Length: 158
Image 1: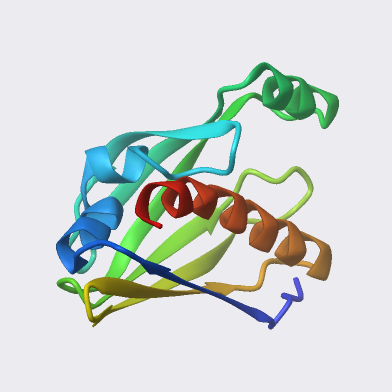
Image 2 (image 1 turned 90 degrees about the vertical axis):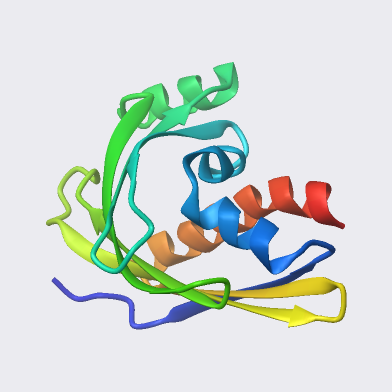
């Protein structure tokens, strides 16, 4: 299978501490508070924020509009996500390798989310780099979805 080699880079600066932003990525409560595009939520089952640690959660459509949209696409309203923390440097860097195995007709593959955090005065700069997906179209949808979920943090930390 050919992959879109594009890397999607999304940057944000938040009025928060490094610890606050780090905890959004590395604790069950933090992750569940914002993960998933608008209309979705994450129900975390396992989150072991260490090198080689497990991240398992369900991505759940939680608005009537998204449940209906998933139904129209022939998709269930939720799917299990399996991932592994492949790098952890407290409050500065983490990487998560997701197994993309929920797309009908697409062979399972891995996709990495790389997160770099740095203090900028009383704010935190977050740079997220996403691996391209299996097609240019899905890479575009991935960028749109990730940008959508960041609106939850944009509202909280601006």
